[in-house]
Length: 66
Image (cartoon, rainbow, N blue to C red):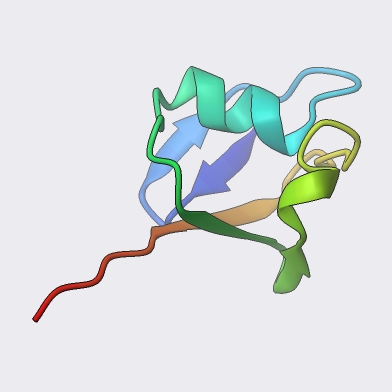
């Protein structure tokens, strides 16, 4: 089990990547910053960064305005 944004729970799967988590959560925003257990994950690593079981994942949608 992993926890996303301190509220949503997902069943963990072997070889689960950051992109897998984003897809399961239906997060489709272009500008998303992700941390796994407090570690910032670079966007270019979303396909390869493995999310461990019992991880705490935070996904922040970056916004701008004026």
